[in-house]
Image 1 (spheres, one colour):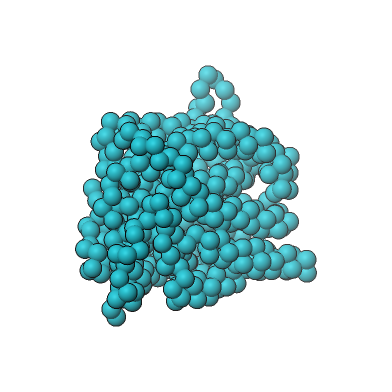
Image 2 (cartoon, one colour; image 1 turned 45 degrees about the horizontal axis):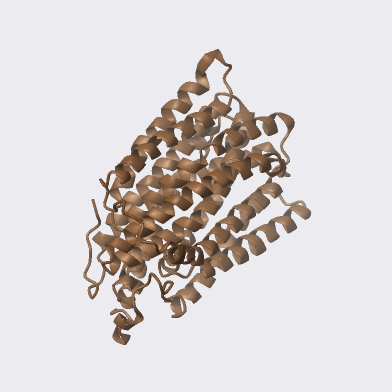
Amino acid sequence: MTAPAARPDSPVSIVSILALALPSGAVFLLASLVGIFMIRIAATLGPDAVVAVNAGTRLYNVFLAIAAGINAGTLALIANAWGAGRREEANQLLGIALGLGAALGVALTALTWVAAPALIGLFGLDAGAYAESLAYARWMTLFFAPMAVFMVLATSLRAAGDARTPVLFSLLTNGLCVVLAWHWSNDPPFGLQPHVRFIAIGLGLGNLCGTALAFAAWHRSLLLLKRTRPDGRYRERVAALWKLGYPAALEQGFLQGGVIAFLWVVAHHGAAAFAAYGTGVSLLSLAMVIGFGFSIAVSVLVGQQIGAGSIANARLVTIRALRVTVVVLTAPGLLLAWYALPVALWLSGDQAIAEHTVLVIYSFTAILPMLAVEFCLGGALRGAGDTRFPLLNVIMGLIVVRFGLALVLDRFGFPVGWIYATLVADYAVKNVLLVWRFRSDRWMKLLPASTAVPAAIISPDRLHPEQ
């Protein structure tokens, strides 16, 4: 169930990269397909329901952003411990991360429930779309805790090299989500009338069931990472998770906040333009999940190589993964762009939304090679413990460049297609900054001292990979 391991002194092969990237990408693909199905199911309930799913997804992404802090810290620390052969340390870290994930999920449920009216109000939706969006978002928040637990467990298994087990649990979970959401959107329980809230309830219950099974498997020590008795080093591990996690959480927070601000500008051009952005992203996620998979693989392998003391191989695996990612990320995006209009029309069921979605797809297709750079180089930085630079990168690219340009273009009355196209400027700036950072040695930093491999085992002759 684990990826083929390379010796610390030998370069990581493409096979090892793919063994982690493809299953990890498959998990994101399943989630993306479910997102598309939810939009298609919502389309049978009317345009307001489509807007509700897209708006609710934006708030769900805020939850993912904050949960990313725990996941980023957990992945880097467990990968480092696993690469150094410290299995018990990896098990201890997982136990702590699961508890933190559950607590965070409960807290975010309460906060999002209260803040949902104000957050959805930022989109400037009409009364019908606002009411349905609020109902969808609030029901979804009730299931944040089990979702957070599953994400931590899946991330930890990948960090140890087991990318296949999360796929199996994701197949089960997402299958339940689709069946329950589809059935209850057409035939709600207790004789109630169809409503978009039942899509959220179906999604939530599917996630709850899948998480319960995954947690039971861990509790019975059936997984690669085992349940173990706490050894009392709780504070220092939490401190290490915090040191790596809070920049990642802030990064994702700025990312989602920036996207919401960007959508606020898009919403000035009507509900169709707003819904089209979410629909287009859902479609293109079928291509982008490949990049997510490679980002996870690079983070894991870089963390493991640093844990094993091989800085050179950590850099080399990033370069190898990037070459493959550019090709496999761009090809499906070009295919989707070719059939953009019929696919968008089938998915949304609305001509106006479909026409705007085509513009979104064209803009995203143009940046797919740049996305490959962000996925691989950003993944390398996070796996090495440099979680602060990606935060600065998001602030500069998304907040300053994309949102700033969108405001200016909107102010001067440019069509919404120009606002969608600010994506290109955003990712161009971020690529320049990431390449500069990667070419330096500053990102090759050790993890927190309490968990990282001792610096003495990293010899100077390992600092530069063979070409």
